View 1 (cartoon, each protein chain N blue to C red):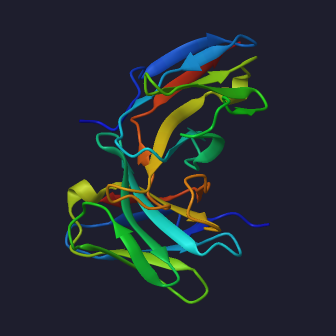
View 2 (view 1 turned 30 degrees about the vertical axis):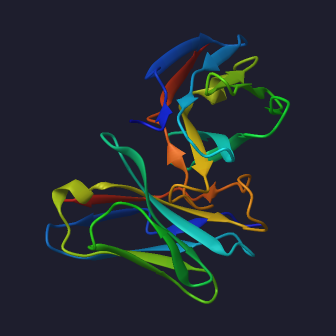
Length: 116
Length: 118
């Protein structure tokens, strides 16, 4: 079974541009979450999508947005890039069979975004 | 206040020895889950072990065990018989379904960098 796939692996952009990152979850997984990882702030939750609906959102400005398609694939978009947006962006998927606390998140290898 | 605290930025362990990575957490939710993930230099986060707040026994997964002390709010990871391939960043994380939480939202600690010496 293929794991979580994120594309592209590396991305270089300049300030003011926008960027779109893609995530394909494990087959059958309906929940996709996005995280930002930086050396200073660590891993921070961006948002979670389930059945094409945003279910939860972290404390990030509106420049960060996402969406989920009917096949559970997800994209996140960052507009008007700032230097501080340079980070590893990780996507995670989960099965979401119930409402318990034990659902494992399976992560992709991430997209390393550098903003110059 | 931080919800997940990992006080050891870096640790060294000799190959084949055991090592304990510390994690303390803070939550008012009676139902929560605790996770440990490993992140090698490739970047992918690899699930290691899970402990639920109502679980009576400490979780074990192969060489990994979780020393869960609920009253002290600690969930330390124990790796037995360390291997060179264990060198990586290790993150403790918590899921709480109240206080704005959801299943896709894990709160992570800052991590501990483990280096295994031959």
